[in-house]
Length: 250
Image 1 (cartoon, rainbow, N blue to C red):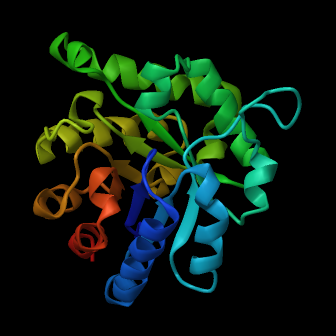
Image 2: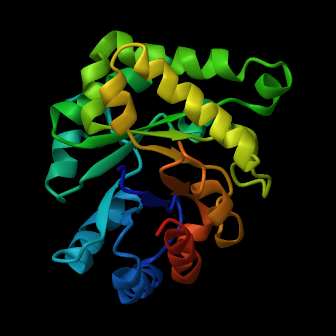
């Protein structure tokens, strides 16, 4: 039985005071959704504060990105070993905004996935298609290509300590959401791709849905057999909304 995971990607949002209040709100309601694993992903500069406030609680935390390099002359980058200093459990790799806005290729994402694992971090690998790609009917081709880059570099066994997040780019921050049937179809496809290589492992990998997830649609999405939680954007900035999504997974 795969335990649901609800992960809050705060993106470039927050302040010292707002994050403290947000975390307290999540902590106040965490016991009621203990059946679901909760994790938050603040901007790098707030990792220390998040670590301090969440230490000893059941809520985990991670980073939104990392460098493919372990150290060196890479101004502005953050290495996996640095994230270890803040006791991060997870790190997001290949988010659509990293792929589209910052030009990260499938191969760069694969190397970041490898860098995370080398540091003992669990990568949350994001895959998904643009609106144009969906309209062209190539969703599965795109997702398969994105998965293949990681599988070619790290192998199927690497997914034993990883999470996948399917995020249709056209549904991120737009208010549009894939229907539960559309999301389930792609989640099942992802699991089937892994099952070709290792059926047992494929049945154990958690696959999250990301794309305008909110309390009002979480119940239907999380009831699908291959949707194991959510990678939540805007709704994760409100503790009530975030916990409402988690309750849908209980």
